[in-house]
Image (cartoon, each protein chain N blue to C red):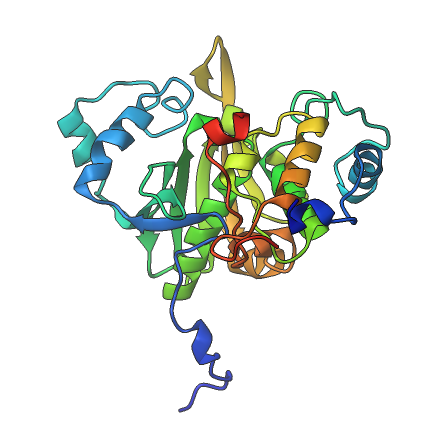
Length: 212
Length: 97
């Protein structure tokens, strides 16, 4: 029986890992040390899986891959610099969902680049698997960096465990959000779509030249 | 003098503030150039996406706001300065515009 849906345009048959400012690339051995340093950054560690603990380098590496469906280092265009990591994991193929996590360098927080990296991952995941939703678990202190996204239709808060995590002298909620396929398709019509669209790059002078 | 210096459609700071207050959904109606986008105006990552897209649209030409410029934005004035920079920098590989 033939597929009733029209065939997609051939131009869209290759999944791209390029976003407007970033590229998602394969994790290589050279990325391990920068990611290990990032995982222990005080502004990151409590929000990442290690929750402030300091695993040995070997233990860190052992925990990088189990359960992973796909993961990519986040780098700027034209560079191998490690800006962060996006990962889809714990895929459930029967019920058609997976989990995802994003970690970005603290200097990039509240700049929209974490959303850009996540949307690049979501595009890849929804392209390659017939998943209905991507689930993210987050901590209240990180959630406040993107909480307005619920009203904007980026995701839905599905659950909240009050005062689950201790950090910075107080307890923070644990929050579960879903990003559903239909939400992805809808937000792609707005500014988020622009995050994934190609465009024209400008030549930025190096800082020393700009200061002269 | 390059062709970069001749753009006449680049907003002044006062025009930019008026544009910001009307175009950026999360902006209050009155803003000062000294306002910190995060601390004073409550911008989060989603708000930053709106701002980036709006500035790119205001500059036109399907231009991309580079990360280097993005990271220099803390206040409304910074946003204006980087908007101006984006409007004047040459395209990569294409010389002046």
